[in-house]
Image (cartoon, rainbow, N blue to C red):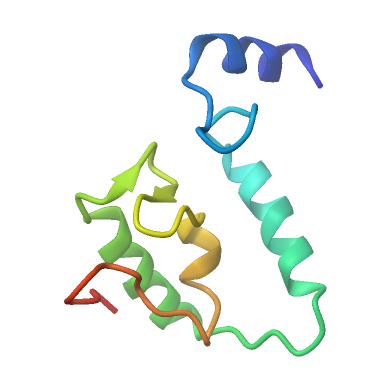
Length: 95
């Protein structure tokens, strides 16, 4: 773990489900997304649909730390890109 990651962990709240920081950098999200795409037969949405989904997530009151949905605990930048995913918002999904 590099020095900035250690400092970030000290200064930010920890995830309830693990010992890591709840905030992810854009680079960390890209790395996670790349690992997700290595799974065989993962279908993704178009860039236009992805941006629409992401905009809805970013404007949602259920988004925590700018990255995480409180309803499912997912990283929205990953969930929004996956074609088979749906918004987990209860009763009225946003996408």
